[in-house]
Image (cartoon, rainbow, N blue to C red; front, side):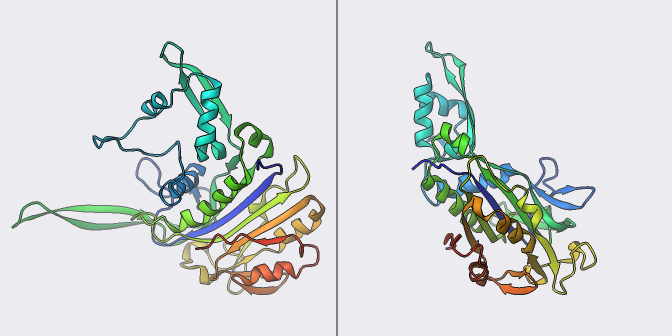
Length: 329
């Protein structure tokens, strides 16, 4: 069934001794020079989602690398020619087939009736949009140097010096919106959104390449609204990061650059919960997934891991709205 209501998504994950999103020049982690906060682009998160849906769920994905029989990569132009996009009806069939087009939209250059390229352009604005992810604390990239050994013959081996930029630790927060108005154009369904939630959480867990290994999803919240064209906004700014003494990280407490694990942190959700309580009449449901290793503070009470769901249900205003996402595998 096509979605009818707007949702907001809040997603937190962390990384240790790896690079969540390198820049195109040095492959160095992206850093806001003024705040020393780690930045991760929305494109990186969408790549995570697409890869998981294609590799682990066998979903048809449009924007994915494909290898031809000769071992070469298939170009986007070749995919377009295969798709035979010459009319809006042809383009609509692509939407029906490819999940990522329904989620994120696309601009597709089709063929003219005479076979010419780029004569017709079909554009959909994706219902699912994310802001850049940002770490909730300052970070400091480290350049790791080493050597690699490459076998060249049975008797000899060649070597090379290597360099890799990593972050010792970064707790990253993404905020996004699922827009019910744009969903009309792409025909986004509730099942599609469920696949999205699964891919955000488990796609992050399954990033096990050399530069991405060590990423762990920590908290995923989806707030779905009853009122049309409404959302709270800026959910990512309603969370505070505290050290184990309950002092503000990068404020009066521990410096973010020195943090090395989730065990050194508490997430204060009081401001977020207050915002939901104040607008509870506009909210249909609040769906939550949480990692067991995270410590939360809620109204001066410490809560560990999945006990957060019970604690939220104990709040009178939220009691009937809380659901468990159950995407953790």
